Length: 136
Image 1 (cartoon, rainbow, N blue to C red):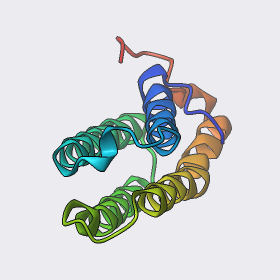
Image 2: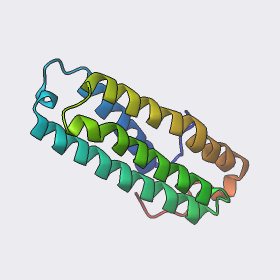
Image 3: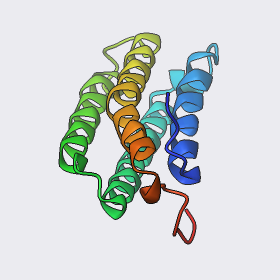
Image 4: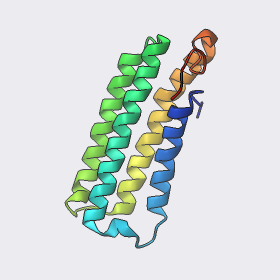
């Protein structure tokens, strides 16, 4: 994965991956309780939405020509997360499989779409995310 060179967006990526891994590795943890899982899923979907908004704004601020396509990929990613998590919220699927699938979707998005933006930034050093920015 090519980092964005933006502390907030890179931290978002790390947080999401860590979130998936911690949930997957917590044997018999709170995710077995449907109420707790609903709260965790809502937190995940909210965080993903905020992350997508931050990332798209960053791209617009830097003049990235593929922002609209990337934004559409974000909408697809959010729809897939909801599609995969909703049956679990209704008690129909296995949590381990759900988390594996949404984690893979997120990683696939990063190495496909986000890496393309990182490569673009490398070719346009004057538009680096760390230059001219007041903070995350």
